[in-house]
Image (cartoon, rainbow, N blue to C red; front, side, top):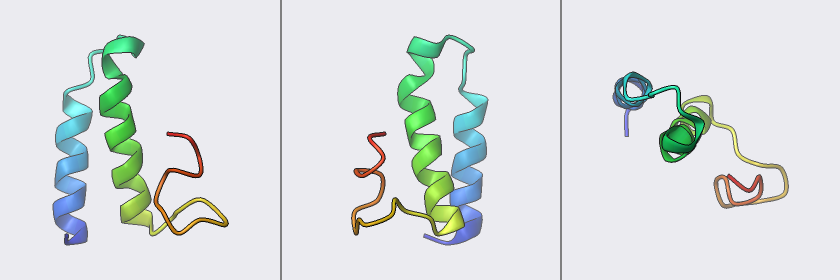
Length: 55
């Protein structure tokens, strides 16, 4: 995916947040994964995105 496409998807997900922590958990997880892809970050000592950090 292009970075611009990822950013658009991130903004769309942020617009879906309700403020209820339990309802937003899945959306926040998706946001976290997109932010990691956008920033080129993954947990240390792992080759799999986000499994190492437990999200």
